Length: 391
Image 1 (cartoon, one colour):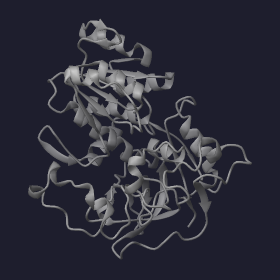
Image 2 (cartoon, one colour):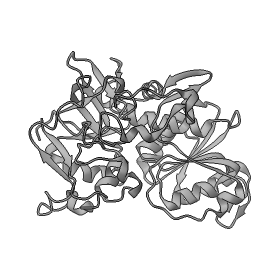
Image 3 (cartoon, rainbow, N blue to C red):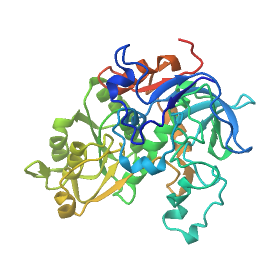
Image 4 (cartoon, one colour):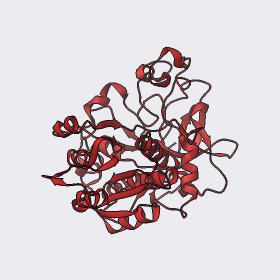
């Protein structure tokens, strides 16, 4: 079993910046990510299944970890060393393809699921993420007890597995997990909004374009204004259903035109009903707040790190600032379904392979990470590892 491993040499994942992770040949081999042959650990319990990995995507949170930009908040929620990779398409021993819900829930940890009546937030309590049969870990791909997808094989608990329909290609199927995250964010952004809301989407990487598609899927009558940086992102967002796509610099003016709002300094007097920030920087969060109407909603979709923004406009506008972490179950039009099911519906509406750009063998992990880190500038979207490739 060949696998990529994040070492335990630095608890804050800052042992290497981008250059030493995938930089010059002389720099390769340093940093927290390294290639290893052979077996990586046993199954946590006899219930866990061994899977053969087909494709495993590279996520923005993975890049944050490798560049030393992951928030210190995650230190107690992660155990090292671990095999990364939580966007996973794999094959069971019977040949069936599955995708993995990487969140290490109660069942995966050998714990009794909570009674929703005894817990807030529909029974969710993150205490279980550091308990049970596993070491601490927010997800597969961030836990030394549970495998990750940047490997030829990995372990997963049956409760994590979702069957892949036969009509989806491998390249479409590996998008289910990230598109599910986008669908969850879209559902939060649309919750309790007007019948025909104005929704803003800032950032048009893989998650941003998928978020546009999810909003259009859930709310055909919505007006969607999106902001991106590169021509291929603009084209993809339009195909995904955005009504207006502009540069980030022109975004406030576009929302102003759509709402008839006044410009007051850098902010609008009114704005979008909900704004979804799919980047997660201080600048994009501040832009989202300043272009969301009073008592509107700002959804942090892209994983922010340690950022500093002026919260006076949030206070003055009485805006709601909320996060959108992964997925679960969504109630849409009175029907409650897992977000992965919604993601499959969304992916089916777009061409094959839609947001999938390129795959690399594990041995070329320096090139793969470099490509993923510069995907926008290189006209790409999702980059993935294909452990079946030799070179």
